[in-house]
Image (cartoon, rainbow, N blue to C red):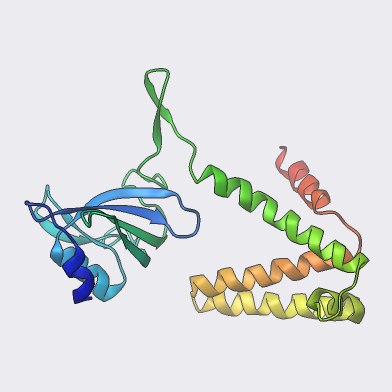
Length: 218
């Protein structure tokens, strides 16, 4: 930790600008300042701490709102005078209730609501299930030795349904333990096995999307 701190160039006022970014989506969440104490607390606890210049006090993100940030990675810029915190954000980042503090944009010389999230990530996450489904269907048509997907197809429906049941149970256990990262991991496993079941019945992913669209009138 001391080696890292020695590389940080705090300003003459003792502060350092810190940009906070969602580690999963890349969305920029907020901007704040750190002094040495705030940075040390962040490094020690793994939770983001900042220095409030208006209140002249150290504060931990989420200490009153509950919207805490678990720091996954810290990056220092080339000059050593700015930080990038990549975090898992619980709840929202902005005190207004918005997901990101950067929820406004300049449009026609006026401020307008900006779309949330990272556009590139939005495109990626809406297509990743389709890409996986396409690979699953290819494995069904063109079996490959050593492929787990092919093993499931070969074992048949009973095995696939059993795996879905097992993965659903794992999701429940992770949720009961309030283990956010494990919930994400287990739901990803569950989604995969559900996609295999769709493949078994030759049901395209678009059929599920169409059904959801009907229910929500989109």
